[in-house]
Amino acid sequence: MFTPRDQMMAFAGAGGGSGFGLRTAPPVVPESGAILNCTKTHLNAPKRTLTAAIERWCAAKDLAPDLAEDIGSARWFRGFGTMLALGTAAVLMWPNFAPLQAAPLTALDESSIDEFRVQGIRPLSLGADNGRHMTATQAVIPLAAAPERPSIDLTATLGAGDSFPRMLQRAGLASSDIVQVLDMVGGQIKPGTIPPGTRFAIRLGARTSPAQPRPLEELTFRPRFDLALHVKRSGGGLALATNAIAVDTAPMRIRGIVGGSLYRSARAAGAPPSAVQDYLRTIDEHMAFEEIAPGDEFDLVFANRRAASGEQQAGDLIYAGVVRANKPVLQLLRWGKDGAFYSPQGMAEGSQETTGFLGSPVNGRITSNFGARRHPILGYVRMHAGVDFGAGFGAPIYAATDGRVSIAGWHGGHGNYVRLDHGGGIGTGYAHMSRIAVSSGMSVRRGQVIGYVGSTGLSTGPHLHYEMYRNGRTVNPLSMTSITQRATVDPGQLAAFKAKLAQVTAIRANTSR
Image (cartoon, rainbow, N blue to C red; front, side, top):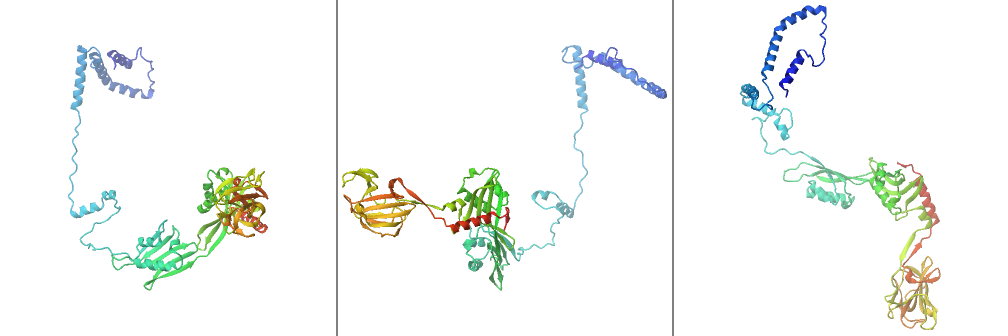
């Protein structure tokens, strides 16, 4: 807040400014405006004189002192009185906030009220549509019941786990119509084999009573890619019309670069979801996904089915491959009646088959292991080339695995002896039998009875002497639990496989042929 001295200095600076601020030169007045300026100065002279006198009086009286100084003095009470006077003047000049009187309301008749009601915007907040709608008058006659539509068109989809009859029942078909539809459709396709997702176009006709179900007029659906069925009411009954759709099947090849996701990369290249899933399952059986890095290429060929009506459907996967640096890392072609996938290396080497051996060829415990021992009859140490199982006389002896009988009869110190050839240089021998149940050249299956425990030959009691041969040499039977056999490669099959592989890989990528 300014003190009286500050106010006086401000007044002095405003009046002449001697010692305050900078001096300014008086403006230069053109000679042409001298007379006009003289007239203005003469008229404003009394006003300036009165203003200067009021300013000098206010400065001398000190009407607005600082109330924080000289509290309780006459000067302070004079300033306090000035504050009260100004406050009282402000209260007396307080404006009046009384509401203004609006124009008088116009009386509306009943027709005008109805007009304003239909044009009001309040119904919009309750979901009404806009526009001019007139309310019903006495000329409108209310109906007891709304008339029914002559027909209803529906679209239904068979969901997973749903059945064809239940779907028709939910659509509103009568039980008699459902039975007729099932009988007619059953002659073309089993209703249980209709795939989920099949869409049905249904038309229901007019009914005689609201309490009765609507009769079926038309039912159209496509249970197979190459078959469309149409049920239509004709002459008071339902009739079935079949439409066989011509389907062309051609292989389509999709190839692209692997990005962050093999599945998304294949889908982005245009491969259908079913073909991509078959491709991933096939690759997973021969190669770990971790070995496929971004930048590699996926390569798949599937049977693309095209119907005469324009639809397309992905069929079985034909070829699955992985390419790295323009060189195939993995090539798998569907081959054979079983529909399995084979690589060129696997076909050239032949397929492998692993056959497991029985844990024991006889129900008994081991009494003597494989290795050097003192012979109980001969009395000197010699190689025991098998494993002895103690068992009761006449206990059945089983074939260790599939094979062909190469020896069945007396075999020196082995007594009654059977030897089986299992292929791949592997054979098993069964000695000291009381009776042989097979003959030479006979094929046996694993677990088949080939003889019975006895004590023939160099034997001190009933037991089974069990031997195993690998390439003609005896080995410890307990050291082998399974054998792996490789099938013989047919040169004709191998040549046909390579020709088919070359034909498939010659298809242009992202096209069909």
